[in-house]
Structure formats: C-alpha cells, structure tokens
Image (cartoon, rainbow, N blue to C red; front, side):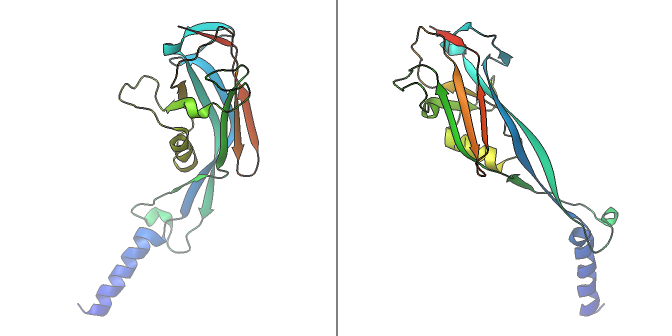
Length: 189
C-alpha cells in the first residue's frame, strides 16, 4: 500500500467522522423570570410567617431553545459514526440582576439592590453544596446549559417585624427587562 492510498483513506474517514454531520449548535433565550418565597421546594402562600433558617427565594426562568442549523454538503448524516452538538450559551446574555425589598433591611434602603447579601444554590437539599456568589451564578446562567432555576438565601439574618415583599429585576443585553415579585412574607426568628 502506498502513501497516496493511506492519505486517501484518512480523508474518507475524516469525511465520515466530521464532514457528514450537520452543524447543529443550539442556544437558549430567557422568556420570563419568576421569584417565589419558599421553604424547601414548596411555595409559601401570601402573608406567611417563616423562620429565617428555612426561608428561601426560588428563581424560575422559562427558556426557549433555538437550533443554529448548517446542513452537511458531504455524505448523509446517517453514515456518520457520531455527531456532536455544541451549546452556545444564551442568545441574549443577562447583564443586570437585582433583588430589592419594599422595606429597609440589612442596612439597605427599600428599593436598593440586596444581591451582595445573597448566596445562590442549585439544589435546595444538597448539604454538600456551599453556594455561589451572584457573579458565579450569572456566569452559569449565561454560559452553561440548564442552570436557570436556583434557590437564593440571605447570608445575614434579616431583622424585621414587618411583612416583606421582594422584587427581581433582570436585564438582558438587548435591554429587555424581566421583572417579578414575591408575595408578602414575615421572617421570624
């Protein structure tokens, strides 16, 4: 067997492995965002009272998946051994994330961002999970598939005898604003 046959054989294998696959990359777009006062995975009804240690706010994001499709110009894909699809991240990245409250808490005025006091968790009941910062959370949301629903909790104890309502404001890179608010909740010792 000479060198020309060997090179030709590698070219054919290359076409079979890569050339016959359609380029099928995909990305997600956030359609809406909702926040809910919760204990574990259960939403709290309006005007609930809950201990600080059990209080969480869940973020639920609805997304739509879009495929970026480029057909193959070589052999049909049914002759390919395997094809790989890449996740491209969010079509419109999250550029702003704020959680505010209707009352003064944690030394912060009502209506001002509280996200520096938050820890984000992917799974509520995972004792091994240490939690992540807002910046790490936004990196996961913008760049990794299936990281849209999280649980937040406050790092510091909230001292308030009043019912509180929290507001979420998310802004995407095209200036689309997504807003949500919780029911009223009273956080007790």
